[in-house]
Image 1: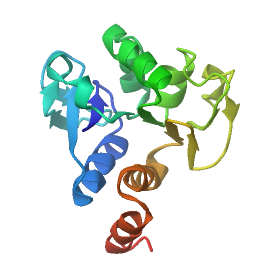
Image 2: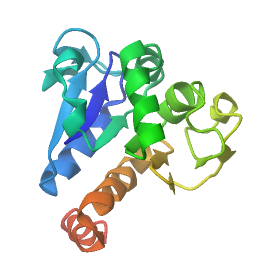
Image 3: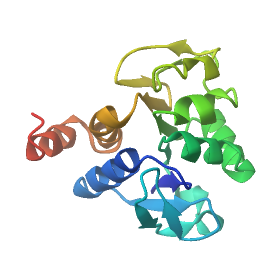
Image 4: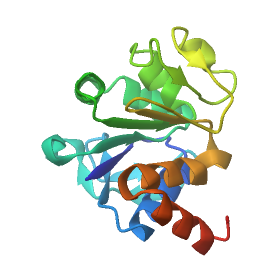
Length: 181
């Protein structure tokens, strides 16, 4: 299972693109609200009904935690203590974490999860991940951490997740179907 975490203020493109592409690849994915309610309002007013609440998520069966950006959404994720505990656990046990836009900096960087790792984030936010090696690549993978830059890289980000779980052939087919290849 792949959990895409939603907090009020999340970036629509970054969350919904991931969910859409993973479902096209037939990967098990659910949206998880950290707000305490299923309705979550995105950065530009889109209201989404999450699949499950954080309290109901089974992290024992979770293969990857996905963190969309959007400044306010990422800040809200970064102060959700139980989510941060899960992130430390995943980071330390080699389980996958994927973050895009503001989330690598505001969530992972501020909690030291990127220390000593190569990573990327939305330009200008790299100061929030001072102990990471900041790269300008659209997608960066270092061990079990996948990071990406922002809304325009959401498809690359989602395709990288697909490649991790389904391999290069499925990634290539999904890209072709989307007219990216």
